[in-house]
Length: 243
Image 1 (spheres, rainbow, N blue to C red):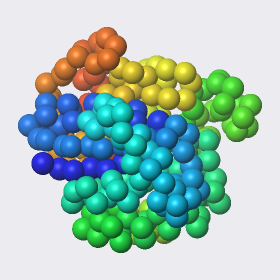
Image 2 (cartoon, rainbow, N blue to C red):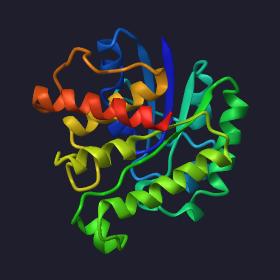
Image 3 (spheres, rainbow, N blue to C red):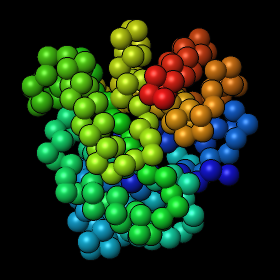
């Protein structure tokens, strides 16, 4: 059993929805816990650790439990193999918004879960033409936003000496460039192939194993089998490029 704790928001919710099912299809078992606050930025995670606030909706294996916990409580519930951290999506391109909060969160995780590998979850760009991409953030294209996102998460990984980066944003951009519709509202991942791609990318990054050829399973909305096979291939090639 691999134990994964995600300290995040709706983007980690998207990424972990199918993670255990992807792992089981590949013959492994991953228990994944997501600490969810919608739109939560790093500064708020920092505030919550300072106050030991039980502010996070506890999600286990992609399902809400109805319970609320603090980060400290979650870190102490078991011996974690991986703990992931990320910035909120609209601040992800701007590294000035990461610090000093990321360093403090990393130190906090080290204090309460010293054996866990610390992982940076690279978030993704908004959909081309969306108001959030063009009007809110001022980018012309998703690739322009993602280049800033990529740089910021690479710096984040360096600053906390992270064990690895999960290249979710890279995988999402590659799929979008191949003409797939990866977003459900121009910024969150689609309930079908978007979330499946993210789970496959996480599985490959965390385990070093391939999802190519692993059995498929029903998603929350219908997804074409050939599209899912392509998502496996994209996840594999993306993670391989980050090694």
